[in-house]
Length: 139
Image 1: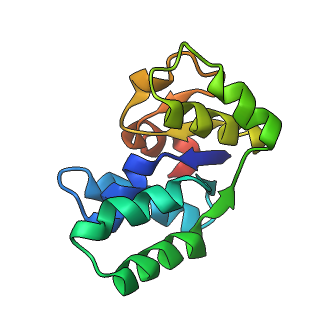
Image 2 (image 1 turned 180 degrees about the horizontal axis):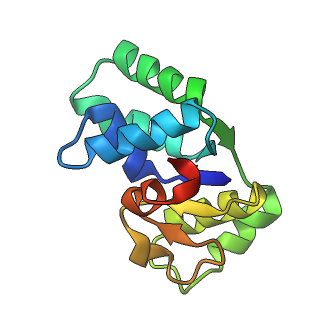
């Protein structure tokens, strides 16, 4: 199984954000254990680095990203796919369009996110961390 982890789930894990940390941590663990192939979108990394700037030093943020990249593979989208994403007017958030394109690039089975509704027009099914963890094949 191949999954793309949305930025919010990665942030839940890195910041130990409650009440979401446990499920996010379990998602990262099943990726580390290679029960699933976990990916993160290239553009999520600078977003995470920027979001964490108020509470973490540059050194700590770099360590956090390294930790993520140790477990998750990084994927991106081609020039053409980014241009396609710019035109997706059904998505309310451009960043979600890019997540969707990255998920398609790796033939992901699922996008793992807490904001499933943001991906209602996605051809790649978006599910919550809990929904993935409840699946028999990842236990």
